[in-house]
Image (cartoon, rainbow, N blue to C red; front, side, top):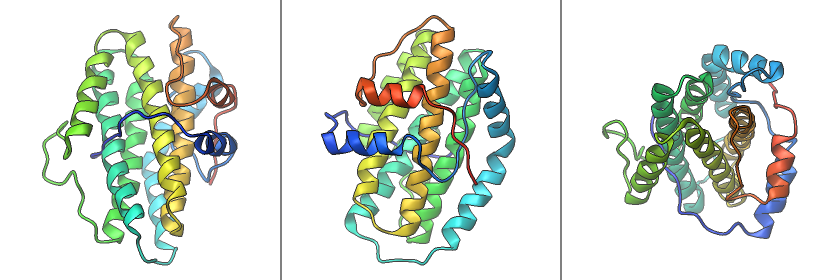
Length: 242
């Protein structure tokens, strides 16, 4: 991945709950599962994701380029700048976990997060917005809240394998909450295209992290989704598309 950041935890409004549930079977294309132990379907998705990152990035670029350039609102601009950072936080936490824990789920999803960050960076470039991560060292973020978020999540992921997998679930929940909020504040077709696919990728990532967590004997309580929303996602099949 490249660089990104996250937001401060807040209660999820009911309208976000309903939107996330509506998205469970939606989306435009998948951006990688992570694989979950012996689950053959998850392993197949994991392998396909690992082989397809470059192709996915090309598809995203082509899809965005095919859409008209529209006027950018202040809310859309702020959303892109935030998601650029948030996707990087996810990547950097997962990359750190991959160096510590011998499960492919971390490296595979970190690779997928690179595609996500690249997609958001493409939109920043398209709209002549500065990349907030340009010129920064690895694991350094432009704003204090994202730096703090990264430090907190990375520290927890170093405690144990179970903790690292729980952090993965938490990050994907947070991503979904924030993407939906930014999506509802946007109307530009290219931005909505990217956000829709980031959501699909996050749902797949959550499925992979949670399945692996259960196989390792762990458990997880949702922090940003309701239990019903969380269950609807993790109990549904991996998503794919063109």
